[in-house]
Length: 113
Image (cartoon, rainbow, N blue to C red; front, side):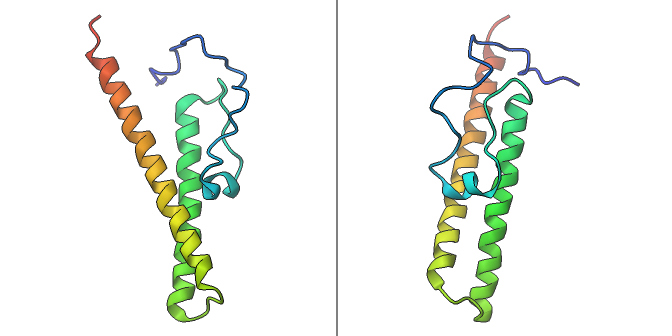
């Protein structure tokens, strides 16, 4: 089945938008793997899947540091606090992205044919 969104074109460039490099504001997302590019290859589904994979990696890092902190093996407590904050911000970003996508889809479904 093809994605209904993949066939929609709004005159946006498909080779990338200058100046946008990804979610660099949330360092945990951008640093865990390659940042998804804005291209016609995978579309929104590929960007969303890549972001969720990055979120899982950031949360996994925070979880492992939490286990180290609980067992007393963690040398610096601030490492866990930083990882925990990155995981929280990454989660908030993904949830906001999901909510915006659902709201956009709902608006598209409300449009008369």
